[in-house]
Amino acid sequence: MHRLECLDGLRGLLAVYVLLGHMAPFAVLPNRLQSALSHGGAAVDVFFILSGLVITQSLLHANGQAAPFLINRIARIYPVFLLVFALAAVVHPWSCGFEDMPWIGPDNAARTICVMADPHGRVAEIVAHLTMTHGLFPNGILKDVWVSYLGSAWSLSTEWQFYVLALLAFSGNRHLCWLLLTLAVAGVAWRLSVPGTWQFSRAFLPNKAQFFALGVASVPVVRQESGALVRYGLVLAATLMICATQQAIGKMLPPLVWTACLGVQLAPGRAGSSIVARGLRHAVTQYLGAISYCLYLVNEPIHKLTGVVLSRVAGGNGTLFTLLWIPLATGLPILAAAGLHTYWETPALKWGRSLAKRVAGEARFGWPAHSHRHGRVCPGHLRAGGRSADGPDTPGHDG
Image (cartoon, rainbow, N blue to C red):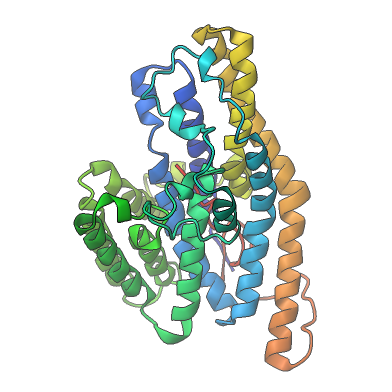
């Protein structure tokens, strides 16, 4: 079994980058540093590419059976999400402390990261989040529902839309990446022709489908199938052209970053790749990859709580606030994510895998499958970061 350790390390670095991107706007930092940390959305796009790879592998691992696949996905996403969402809902109406932060102007990105306004439809928005449908509503129906309560959770809705499509296409459409590219083109056409009131957010799958398509196209590459590189090149070119319609050079970086990291994963010993490969395979990077989903979700409510306290301690002194803020806003979410991963996420994942195996066995043979203690798996199946193919994919991320 191949272990995609470089890609798991990439996941860890992306989660830390998103964390730093959420932390930086609150601090007094040089403009260049602020700008360098302001591309969290691009980091989530790379997460979506990784998800396209992992979810396709997960479906192959489950032989296209819906029940085992969905059980693994629910166990992967919901336990951590529900816990963090409950915390976010409790702290949502609290002040962000901006009244004690005179260095944060009205246009500062911190005001879009930490919000305290009441949702436009409290019950409807909670239901939308709990059902992962909050990315399906244009502003004309539920304004800004995709980032209410827990902003980072917007990408989870995008993920679930992809899960459903991938599950349906597994048995009915062998060309999932081309279907996703078609959706992406339709998303571009909608964005360019429909009034703003009926525009969808980036949590709507067609607005991000090209990234999932590139991940799906990566599966034959890592399996080293004949003609895989040619197909990947075509999907990469299409993805770059779709990204170019957003008229921002930064939007084209995620596919290029992914392609470079995929090359490092497949040929870590080549000149120029070995240093990057060692960094991605380092124990610290690997551990950050393991806790990346928890880190991605939990940093926002922890930042709000920390900011409220420190704004009062600093008493309007931006330098003092920054000196206290940077280590606490970085360290506390990592510690919380580590605890969540050990005591909440890992048991849920084990339960989900065990139940999925039993359900798969009952469906295939008519009786419960016997548990395999790290048994053999068909050589074609991959492991990402030492976990089975139905393991972690994206933090879902956000930016």
